[in-house]
Structures are given as C-alpha cells and as structure tokens.
Image (tube, rainbow, N blue to C red):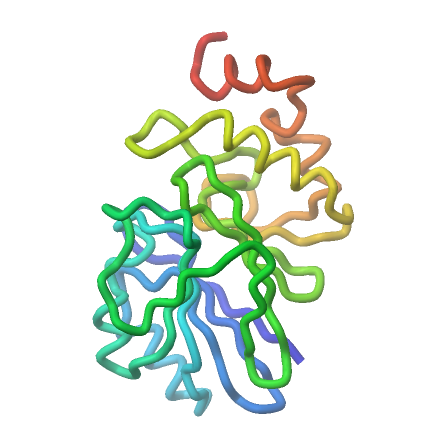
Amino acid sequence: MIHIESFFLGPMDNIVYILSDSDTKTCLVIDPAWDISQLITYIEKKQFCLNGILLTHGHHDHCNGLNELLSYRYVNVYLSELEAPSLTPHVTSLIKIKNQHRIPLGKLTITSYLTPGHTPGGACYQIAGHLFTGDTLFVNGCGRCDLDNSNVDDMYHSLEWFKSLPSTTMIYPGHHYGDRTTDTLENQKKTNRFLLCKNKEAFIRKRMGRI
C-alpha cells in the first residue's frame, strides 16, 4: 500500500515527497532539497529503507540536497534523459529515464512520464491515481517558460497530455503556490487558466505575459 508524506521546505515553497510501500517499508524521495536532516529523521523514525531518488527536473531548488541524501544511503537517482547537461547532476548512480520507465518501490511500481517545458528534463511520476508533477503543473498554475533551457511550445504539449488523464487523478506539485497543496485534475481542468487555453497561441500569450 502506498503512503505519501509531504514536506514543505525552503524559501521557495518547495514540496518534497517521501513515497513508501507499507508492506516492505521501502521508500523513495522526490526532489530532495533544503532540509535533508528532516527527511532522514522521518525515514529512520518509520524504520524505512531508502530505495531511490526521483528528480522531476534538475533545478537547484529541487536537488540541492541530493549529495547529502546520497551520503546517507547511496541509491539510484532517476532523471529524464532529456535534461540539459548543465542541469544534470554528476552522480554515478544516475539512471536517465525514458517515457514510461518503470521504477520499483517494494511491491509497487512507479511510472515516469516525460513532460518537458519548464526544463528539457521535466518529468512526472505516477503511482495508482497519484501524479507528482514537479514544476510542470501547479495547483492553478504551471512552470515558468522564460528561463534558460525552457521551451513554451514543449510546455503546451505537456499540459495537453494532462488533459488526457482520468479526471480523478490527484496532482502533487513541486511548489505550494496555490490555495491548496493537492487537487484533482477534474478541478484543475475547471480552474487552471493554463489548462483552459483554447489553443497553443493563446497559451503562449498567457504564459509569456503578452496579454
């Protein structure tokens, strides 16, 4: 059975997640940053075995604690194969993943989905009806596309992919920027201004601030 624990850390309202399989007491960390001691304290209190690290992309605010966590336990690190070289950590346990890569968590399986736009290596991770969206999709928002390595066209196509998912899917973003920490895609399709854009041109104008 999957259990999700959220940690609200750092000066940029990041959300770091620990996913655990209650049957095997193994866990994975998504986007380790800011306060690794708090994550380790939780893992040890629950008597979990850290089994891997998932990165939604390579920006510093999502992985500045990576080396510290690897010092605690050296495990596989998963990141999109499309991530920019300048945003790819230099660790020997790095596994560059493709779309729909399957990642074990005890008796459970997590599936990756590549969602470029905010960075080339944007990725989401899904288990059952839970989708961890990093900086691709926020509650009532989406990631910036005016940064180095961003691509607004790619972001549009990634957001269109979200519309194909079951409306009951729960999203878990990489930052607490909305009026709640999680939401269903059903609600987001009604309230997220970027998912409501009628076409790519409208999305680009809205995302890039030209309206």
